[in-house]
Each structure stands twice: as structure tokens, then as C-alpha cells.
Length: 188
Image (cartoon, rainbow, N blue to C red; front, side):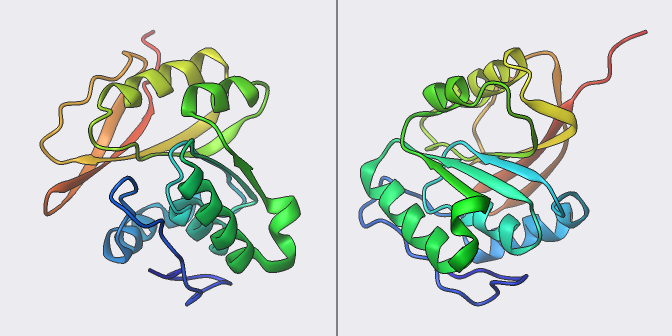
């Protein structure tokens, strides 16, 4: 794995050993960032299931302002920090924050912060985490106006989202699907 584009293009990304982390492939990440390119510049990014940190770090390489990356697995956050230091070099301390906890505690600890771009890529078995995380983010008022949420999931998984959200695009890559989600417009 590597950073695909931007100021850190070509820098290597490492992954924890074992099967607990399922990194987003370079192919899917490249396609995803081609789709959301206009939404990345100066974005405040939140990645609640960091894994390797690849999604948030790709966003930072492409001009995102800052990123918060959360993961509760010790092996994951050690790799995230290694990757972030490799990708960001001297910018690490002021552009990246790594939170070593689960998504619920991460959201609670970040209350009062706003995000423009949110990545949700939990382990595929955690189908309830998508809707739960979105509900918590909404309740904590952490989604900036026009916030884009990108959800990676098993293509066959049925995801229930809070009624305030709508999936406006889905891309399929073999057995993986990527949903693009936004707050639904309020009814007049």
C-alpha cells in the first residue's frame, strides 16, 4: 500500500499483521478520491475506524487541513502513528490527531469539533456501527454544513441509517461497496 496522490505521493503505508484490519485497497482508494476530489481541499477529516489510517492520510496528502483518526486496536493505532509520521513528516503534530479508543468514545471526546469529511469503514461484521456512528455524530452536532460521509462496506450488507441521512451514490468494487452519504434536505 502507498499514498496514491498529492504531496506524499508514493510514500509507503504499513498494515498491522493478522486479519483484524482490512485496509482499503489502492484501487478502491484511488477511485474513491477521484470521485470526492473537490471535497478534500481544506477539509477537516474524521476517520472513526482508522485501521491503517490510509483514508485520512490520503486526504491529508491531497490537501485536507487536518484529520482525526480513531481506532481501538493497539496494533492498528501503532501502525496509524507510524504511517502518519511517514506521510506527514514535520506536519504530523499539527495536522493529525490519533485517538486510541472505539468510535463511541472518540465521538464523545471530540464533541464541539466540526468535520467536513467523515470516513466510516468498520469491520464488516459491525453493520450496526454505521447508523450508530451517524446518529451520534448528528446528536453531537459534529457534521459541518455540506459534510460528506463515505462508508465502505461489504457489498451484500444491508445498512440501516438514521432517517436524517441519505445515500446519494454507491460504487461497487467486486465484493466491496462504497456509499456516499449526506444529510437529507429538510422537508418544507
